Amino acid sequence: MIIYDIDTTENGYSKLEGEVRSITQLKSILTSAGRIADCTGYLTIEGLKRNSICIAALSAYGVSIAITDAEGVHLTLQDADKLTEVVDVWGDGLDISIGLFIQEELAWQVLAEYINDRTFSKDTQWIMSADIPEGGNYIC
Image (cartoon, rainbow, N blue to C red):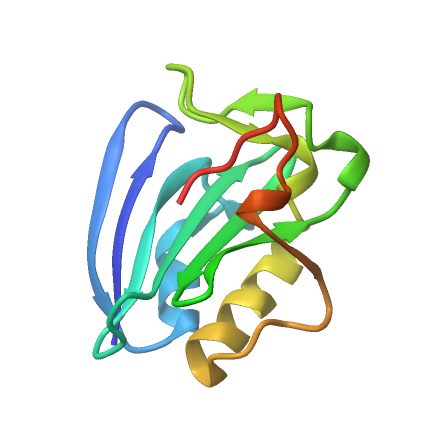
């Protein structure tokens, strides 16, 4: 079971909470007009303690994924040269490095691999939170 707690910022503030059995069900909840809504939030996998997944989606950049486990915070990486460039994902100073956003379709694949197999996708690059340079930021 995947437990989700997502705040969307498109068309006003909206909170989405609940449980789904698959990433496909989650995708149908978070996707409208063929793409994921601008949002931030958390996913937890029932029965998997001390692990969490944080997602942030912005139509202009893609999806940033942060996975926290016993080793630390793992972050998706698209462009290391853009880690000091940040974007406010919530409109209130919640900044994320632009270099952490990956393409939406890849993000769904990354989420599915981690949720289903507990593996970090080899189709994207990963960095640890300690690798974020001064001036950059992430959420988890």
